[in-house]
Length: 523
Image (cartoon, rainbow, N blue to C red; front, top):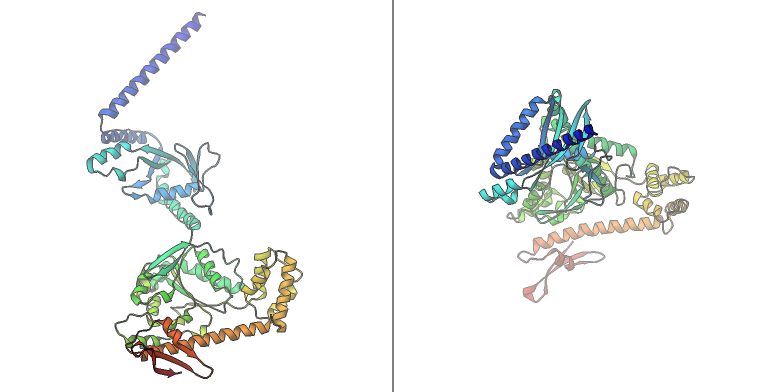
């Protein structure tokens, strides 16, 4: 009993002593906070940390969230990298999602620790949050910049054995930067830009097309993928040979053969943004120049149906228009070629240029030569291999009893992938959809109303429309030349063009003569 009383007395003395020491420490800490300036406290703590580091075998690298006024790229890289290495069994986790199309992102909570192994060496990570309110108020009183300071400063502490310091600086940190770049590229939402005036306007690009879902010949598809892969890896090669780091692709083929899907597949494969250049919105070379300079690196410039742009049909026509009014800085084919292959083509790096057309033979040969359009890709009719890809896309099947018959019909009938896809989408039942495709192909083969006759009529209509466009273009040019000082908009001119069976007449009426007929030209 006496020993128990003695032990309790010793315990009470120890508790009293500890409480007294804690109270003294709190008092000293309060006095230090009140009397010692913030800068001196930081200096004292830094000195204590310096002594502790020399006595310990562990080294620590501090990576703060900001560096001066700018964000610390290494902090952002470490945050993205550690999110892929984090252990979900940790007691405290930070979970977030900023886009409904993306998965949840896990990150460390304040005070939590995790370990990562690189080349056999263990590195320990810890997230630290430090109150910066006193520094903010101090700077605010001095120069009025308190709004630029964060009340809370976050930083990562990376600890490791001192013998691995060289590896940490020259191998591990560069590895984190490289991996974070890949992670961000994979998670990045692609953008598609449209031009209006001299500016680009962007929206998110969520086109699902990929090379695996693209319905075309496998060899051609693989050659495009290999060419793209080779292009993005040849930065030093292009610099060595003295050429701009760009590559041009011409996609040609009838409507419905997959040109737009090919562009989307290329963008998704490379993770490049798309700039859809509408040349009809560009009136001046200076505007085109500003638009191209405004593009980012690692992007795709697309000009669709370039053969339908009246002013770019032939270089001679563009030059003729320039001579008629030297003050005009109109966009011509010559001007466009200068941006594609001239000095202005070096305004960006790692760029893809894509032109599309339904009729390759209508393009100026100067546009098609290597160095401008380096690779010509024919988007043709549906083949048996394309059909199998479409069937897999729409009905998730690799084989069916009707395949041999369908493939034989596809070899006989000229049908586009878009036509086949439309038939396959008509019914969710695979057997019914494939039977419907067989009947559709037979009708086209036998030349029934829904088959060849309809196809021939459509082709004749398209040819007539193309002829109409060409005649309209010639008519408008004659009107512009002969109208002298009278000014007409293109819309007004089109209303004045009168087609007949034998001739075309462009009639101009002068407002000063009470809309009486002044002259007409015969084409």
